[in-house]
Length: 310
Image (cartoon, rainbow, N blue to C red; front, top):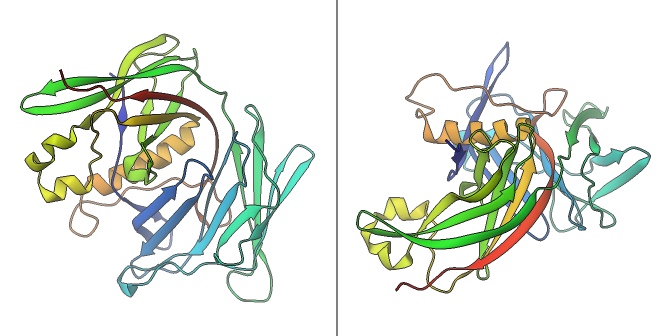
C-alpha cells in the first residue's frame, strides 16, 4: 500500500537528557517559485533554542534560510527572528553567501540566483552570537540532493465515494529500484497551497522500481459538496472545481526529511500534546543543539485540468 500523509499544522518535541523541548504550533510555509519557507515554533516553559530551516532545490532562484528563536507557548508572540548571522552554503569548491533581507528579519537569501544539482551534497553553516556572550556559536547541517524523478504526467479523474464527489490526482512516473521518498506540492489556478498542511508525503513501498501507472496520490473534494462538510473539516481541506488548472510538483526527498515531515504530522494528528501520551522525538539535522531542518531536493512538474461532471 502507498504510504502518504498531509497535515494542517505541526507539533513536535525534542527530548534532551536534561529537559524536554516541546515543539508546538509549528507552521511551515513554502512557495513554489521562491521556495520560501517560514517556521514558527513555540515551546512550553523550555529554554529557548535556535531554529534553522531552509531548502535547496534544483530550480534557479534565490535560495533561502530562515533563522529564529523558539518562544514560550503561552507568550502569544511570534518567534523572535535572528538577525546579523553569517550564513553560507557550500558544495565542493562553490561557496554561496546568504545575506539577510533588509525588510524581513531572520530571512537570509543567496546573493545571486543558484540551482542545486542532483547528486551533490550541500553544507550549511550559520554563525551567530545566539546566547549574547560576545562569541559566535556555529551551527552546521548537510543535505544531499537526490536524483530528479522521471515524471511523465498527472491525470485528474472524477470519483464518487458514498455521497461525496472527489477529484483523484493520478501519477504517471518511473520509480527507481532504490528506496525512495517523495513530497508533492500543488497549485490550483492562481492559488498556491503552500502550507505543509497541504503537502502530500509518501514512499515507494508498493511501487519500488516499477512504472507508476496512474497511481492515485490524493483526492480533492468537489467544491459543490462543500456544504456537506463541517466548518472544522473545511479548515483542513482543499477543494477542486470543474476546469480548474492544476500544477503538481513531485519532489524526490531524502529519508531524513521524509521522517521529519512525517513526525510533524504524527505529533499533530496523534495524542494531544498536553493531555495525551508522551510526545515523540522529532529528528533534526542541525548541529550544536539547534532545531529545524536543512533539506535539498529536485523538482519535477506536471499539469492537468479538472474534468467537468458528465
